[in-house]
Amino acid sequence: MRAPDGPLIVPGDVILSVENVSLGFGGVKALTDVSFDIRKGEIRAIIGPNGAGKTSMLNCINGFYHPSEGRITFKGRPRPRMRPSEAARGGIARTFQNVALFKGMTTLDNIMTGRSLRMRRGFGWQALRFGPAMAEEVEHRRVVEEIIDFLEIEAVRKMPVGKLPYGVQKRVELGRALAMEPDVLLLDEPMAGMNLEEKEDMCRFILDVNAQFGTTVALIEHDMGVVMELSDRVVVLEYGRKIADGPPSEVKRDPRVIDAYLGVAH
Image (cartoon, rainbow, N blue to C red; front, side, top):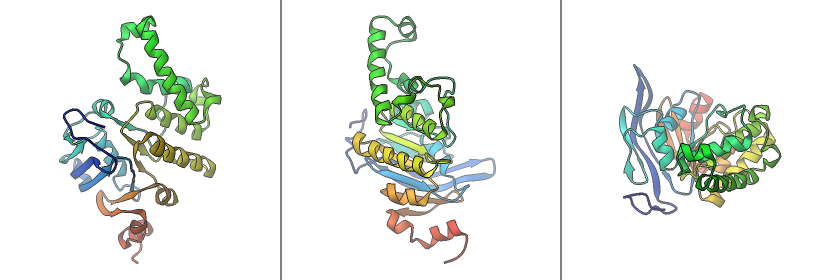
């Protein structure tokens, strides 16, 4: 993969780096001097107790928030004030802690919205649904149907997502993000509220997205069993500061991490 005016990025190279990022809201510090990187092709977990700043960090990465200090570099280019739309066009897709779908639209149409940034024809052509615009829509629908097959949701492709079980809605949201063909996929608690079977399915899909599509994944997740099973590396936040960073086997033995989660000294 080659970014415009940027270096060649191959698996194992840093695709995104967070450098000394701080974020404040009035007198409240959400993040303080946080640094870590994400390598192309890995699954990178961001964990920590409630209020640690995990979602604030994802919001900085994809442009919902702008750091008060530090910088974020994506594909070799510093992006000091990147907007969410610029992040999406550049190759960063996002799912949310609470499902953010169009509840009255079908599964297929929700996932189709993920293709909007890749549509070359203007609104006039799209409204006419004629000639080149029709051919383009057919191609985009083909991609969406492949995602629907991949996520095993063919049976609900024409159903309004508001009528689907919560775990299936989470899968549709993942499908919409995948429809953007991202370089980096940000997942904010993708298994929150799921039962054991739904979690197992979502774990399988995340691993397959990473292995089959080569998509780099950064996820927030509270289930430590899931984190340790899925992740290549883990960064741990507490009260907006980084307290640990490394392979899961090392992080789970770190006394600071144990203390942060259990609330007692070890």
